Length: 240
Image (tube, rainbow, N blue to C red; front, side, top):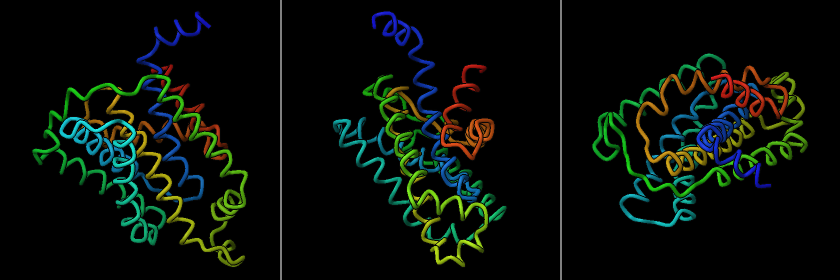
């Protein structure tokens, strides 16, 4: 056990990066696994990250309360956006989600509360490697349970043939909304954990590079398997 603890300590920065990337990869994988091409996850990463940072810096709130409020903020925005966005499909949904990410970056660059282009710094580290990987384990367990459930089977049917899925009586619209909100919740969790382990947050943390990087993790790992985001993220991060 001592050797393992020493190995974790020596590679703690890499493990923190890898853990937060895995969370974001699962947030992006979930809608893709149901045929919903949307990349809004950096939006919720930013919302929860800035919310968590400001609550910690300005209000001095304890981490559990910050987690609840910051993730709740991301989920609340997702609940408002989901009914509008999931009415789109294919390339149209993808383009709108790219536009939303760009909009959030512009807002973060131009309002004072977010620190502008320099972002927010000096955020206390309240999350260590073990905290991040506990969240990773919980999210993976949730994904496994979801895929093995009736809802997971319905997701596969919707992905393979949405028209046939509607013909069997599945409420495809409601399923897309639920998956959108759950994806946003996971991305929000990643956002608030990230700012409390890396001290800072800025517009460069959730732009186009972030989208392309996470898509690489998901695609290389495979979108059919629940283990795909984990494998893709670990392999690409190690190579990097």
